[in-house]
Length: 180
Image (cartoon, rainbow, N blue to C red):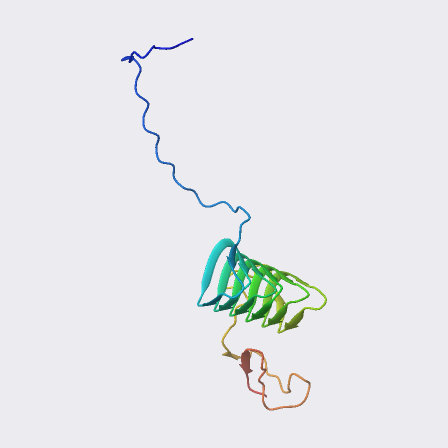
């Protein structure tokens, strides 16, 4: 109905070339990066904000948005993530908001968490500690080096109620003081 029948129209401005679109941050599409069974990686893996499925072996630290250690997976190192699900084996500390140990899990190391669930049959050898924000770098869950602190009051006796001339406690902090 409206055609120019092949005649160029000089009154119509030409359309500008489309501007190149900038790529925004990738949106989680539900596809995980997979370290397959039979693959061994030595070194640190950083997958910030991404999903990571480990079915092979990692000899190093792992950092990711959501990490799942599959039935055949093994991590020898520390893990830091928003969410950690373990079906396989982890030898190292786990620090995450949500930690889930499945019935086949075997964890040898400490866990710092906001939420922890352990299915019957899972093996966990270590200490666990609740923190409101386990991912904060300067939180109370980070290991502290022992330090010497002067006692404000004198105390004569051990922490077990026994008389003692030695006023030290062994819990990461050594307290010294004088007895009167």
